[in-house]
Image (tube, rainbow over all chains, first blue to last red):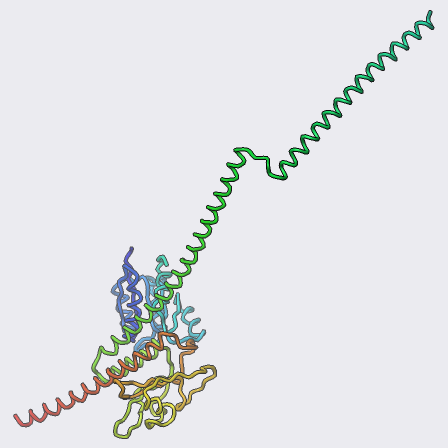
Length: 126
Length: 272
């Protein structure tokens, strides 16, 4: 199986651990964690990632700002971005998709949800 | 002469005609006989066909083969039905295992995070994260028992100010009663619920063995969360025990650190 680099941007260690736990079920993933948007951007400049999962509400730089910055970078114009958030309103979802997110998962999340979305966006067999 | 000739000729033609007519009559007789015979044969054959007595080796062999194939078909259909049932069973089992896996993952992570620190504020932060991210609550409070006043006091809130949450005496109202008995409370009807500090959605007493040290009180769930799942009840049970010990340990640790620092201060004073 090919190796994929996946970046998780989430300020909650509990959520990060849960997302990592879910994604580890996919073989061949290199998972990198960041605690906020700025940290995420630093890590994006150091490695080429195949998928980004980000929270919206984070200190320093929120997820939506991160999504718009990532999308403005030609290297990351097409990389799949997954938003994981507590915001369940349709307007939030539409805003995230309009900014360039590919999928939107609301909390509380289930590991199977993350797994399904990650496989779909990385074109891996279900 | 000519008249006699004519008579003879006419009589010969009449004879010839009679001969032909006779042959025709005989032929017709033969045809009628043949027809009768064939009718009889046909009648016999139809009778045999109806009673099924027309049978020869090939027919009986074919019949037997058809029966065998019919039996095999039934057996195969039976097997297919059994496999389909098994398949549905496996699919259900798979879903159950996935749910169980999801539940265990949540419980493992919650437990791991709760015991990952000895800092009191960090423990409260972890409990908050668990209640938001794993359970899906939007407004809630963590209340601890003040043993001097015997009242529950909010020490951490989410979605509301600490000052908004009234302190509650043990035994008073629903929250105080749950803290007294140590029993979990879940509201029965969640629809159209509006925040009421004295009648929350959920009350989870934080217990060390039978001793209640506080409660987690939930007033509102995230908009996308309409009801509790099985995993939530497991998480509540875990929180009741593990969050209590984590809070208690961190408080003890903070106190011992403070005492140690005070003693160290005295020692420093005495030795200087």
